Image 1 (tube, rainbow, N blue to C red):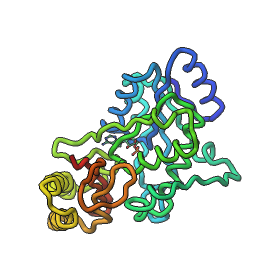
Image 2: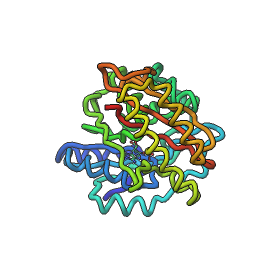
Image 3: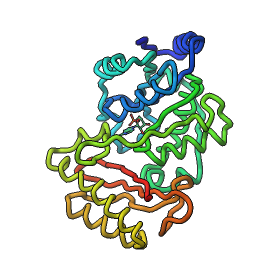
Length: 283
Ligand code: AMP
């Protein structure tokens, strides 16, 4: 695996890969776990070469968020990616990504306004801007993202459609189902912040979500099922719930019952100092 740290060396490396086949791209912030590695494996199946980026993007963190504390494990990540057969690791620093004078912002309205967008102002502007830059830097044939970050995937697809991106085309932005721990907790680089007591209690989140989905599918209004879910989370030791909503899976408009279009249950809740997010299909 080749590792590059500048846009110029990235371009050369990507051009040489492109001569021998299709490129699949997996953007990450590192501290890799099985969720990330599953994206890499899916990418291998679909393309000839896999390019992974590791960049802890400062502009998607709020002033009181965990940018400084966010886990950084470049050596171990690099070993894991090499073992998976990754062709190229793109690991710029913040000065390479945002050179002096950088002044552009991509803001996707509508789909980024509620849920994590409401709880983390500016977060999705940071995500959309850096992902657009990453796409233009790598110019991949396809890109893979986890459904774990459902709203992020919706924002990126909207951005790619609206800006007529061609590499990757919006139809080549692939969502990969969430990889979970044995007790159902969605894997996340932030799970390591949890104390062992909170880690155990955190499994209540996917359990309570499954119960809510069953209740909604049995005909209960979402509002009622979500009160039960919030009560279960607070009883298990969660300190607060940022949001717990049923929404149209594509537009992310809040709905009270599933209709003819796919629906998604989305939750963000805090336990200890950690904010966990999860989502599941209501089907
Ligand atoms: P991150 O490093 O958290 O920015 O995540 C990089 C990519 O990995 C994003 O597309 C995430 O949605 C995806 N990802 C993170 N956790 C999981 C998981 N548990 N299952 C599937 N994909 C995931």
